[in-house]
Length: 467
Image (cartoon, rainbow, N blue to C red; front, side):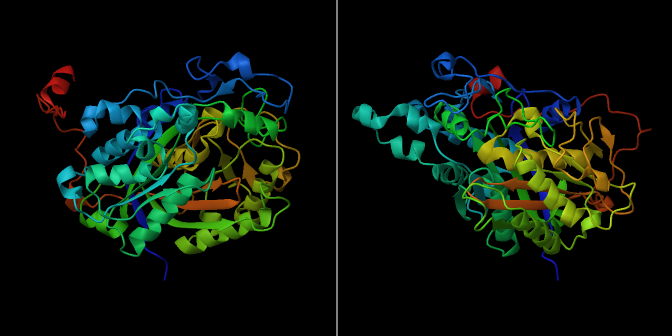
C-alpha cells in the first residue's frame, strides 16, 4: 500500500528578478527572464575580491549572482520584535517569518487555529553570512543577549514556531544544496506518521559575504561568465543566488475534507546519499538512480508516467551528464518515441539558491502543473555531447511548451543534490478536480456583482492607514 499523498495548499516566495509572489515568479519563468545581474554594491566591494583568473587565492572569478532586492527591510513590529532584537537577527530568519506568513495566508490558515496546534516547521538553511559579517571576537561588546538566537540557524525554524505558537516538530535542515527539498521530504514523513497535522516546509539563502564566492571559485564550481548553462555544451559552472520559498502541506484526504484549495499533490519522495563516490563532493549516478526508483515506488508512480523533471542542473561539465544519465536510465525507459522526458532547471533563470534551490524548483514545478505548460529553458543552445540525446528519450524545451495529459494525470519530478552527498527527489502530480460540494466555479455567463469586497489586514492602525 502506497503512503498517502500530500497536498500543497499554500506557497509563497522571494526570488531574484522581483519574483516576490508565485504569480510574478511564473511570469519570470514563462517570459524566459534572466534574473542574474552584477553583485549589488551594497553587499561588498566587488573590485577588492574579483579576479578573472580561476582559483587565484583570496579572490573570486565571477562578479555575478541572483539577488533579491532590499533583504534588510523587515517589519519588526508586525512580528512583535523590538528594533534591537531585529538588528541582531540574521535576515534569513526575517525572510522565513515573512514568507511563511504569506504562505499561510494563501492557504487560508488563521493564527487562532494554528496556535497550540501540532503544526510542524521544516526549514532548509545553511550557514550564516550575517554572523560572519559581525566578527564577534573582533568586537566582543557587540555580543548582546540576542546574538545567539539571532545568528544560530536553528532559530530560522524555532522562531517561526514560537511566533505562531506551533507545537509540532521544528527543525532546521542543513544538507547543503539539497536542504530545502530534504525539508519537504521530512515534512511529508511527519504528516504521514501523524506527528504533524499541518506542516510548513522550505528553505532560505542569503549571499551577504564574499567568503562563499571565494570558496566556490577556488574549487572552480562557478561560471566565469556568470550564467548556468544547464545541459549545454558550453556549461562551465553555476552562479550563486539567494531567496526564500515556503510551502504549506497537509495530507490530501484531510485537505479535501477541510475544503482547502489544493495547488498540487506530492505523490512520493526519497532521500539518500552518494556513499563512497569518486570523492567527497562528486555526484554518484548509481545513487541518483536508486533515489529516483525509491521516490517513484514511494508514490506508486511508473517511470513513463513522469513527463517533466526539474533537475538539480547546476550547469557543470561533470554533474549534468551524470544527472542526465541517471534520468535516462530510470525515467527514459518504456517511453513512446513521441513522448520524451522533458528537462529543465530554474538555475538558468535565477542562479543556484544553494540551501533554497530545491524549493525554488518545487514551486516552479507546481506552477507548471497549474498552468499545464513548461517554460523555456534559458542558455540551452548546443546540447552537451556527453549526454545520450540520440536515444530520443530526453528533450529540453526552449519555447513555452503545452503540457498534455498523455493518458494520465500530469506528473513531474524535482531533484536536488547536496554537495556533501545528500540527494532528494520529490514526485509531484497535478491537483485533483475540486469537489463540487465545496462550491463550483462561477458560471462564465453569470452576471458579475456590482461591488466586490476588498479585505485589508494590518497589525496596527498606522499600518492599516499606510496600506
